[in-house]
Length: 339
Image (cartoon, rainbow, N blue to C red; front, side, top):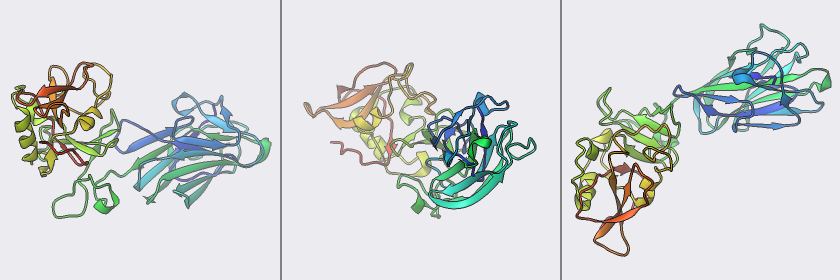
């Protein structure tokens, strides 16, 4: 396939191709490759046979009319550096236009000679644009030069600022502010699974006071539940409710509580060995740590509350509130009154 290496500038090619983002291992860095879910296109784009493709494939357009390929960085605002990648071919167009847009607002345009092996973005990521975005960053490649030449679209890399320094008013209400400021604490993306971000709550290099943001639900969890550190599940339901209410260790904030059955269930999957999402950042949960209390009282019995059993595909079960089990505190959301 004929690929385009995404630069930080919007390149307008005769055909326009839009790319969507896929998060990479490094925090704050995402690559949107051709045919990924982060891309969209208009007109005709075909697989290329060019060399030096990003991740082994790329696409090209040679049809008459305006054809576009778009790469989109969903969920990011603030400062972003954008690189572009495209592939060489002897029949490439020499005036390929690329646009960088902040939502629908045009920020930058660039022109590329894709027949020039020394041109920025040929066979490797090259600089496109570096700026601030208040809406979703988009890079659009245009092919408009008719059928006499071809335009390559391959990949775009977005390296965007993390949460630090961004006004809390611009973030969802579950963010935690730094003491004495209106800025959020520095969440660090968890590379193995971008659904989660981690904040070192106090002691550098220690995970015992780290907290985890779940972007899917907006809830903030203890990274290592305090109740599992001694592997002694001796807290009954009433004690677990009280211990979460009075906790302030994690993130040095109060406002913690026992999660509802639905909230704790939102973390669970059917994936072995611990039934938690692949690549999750949590520590000390799953086998052999077993029953975890929820705040949800069983409707059929006020002396029982629902508990999840992690590590096995076991359903939610109502247990006597006097039993000793683990607890996993959460912050944010609406919760459920414990009684």
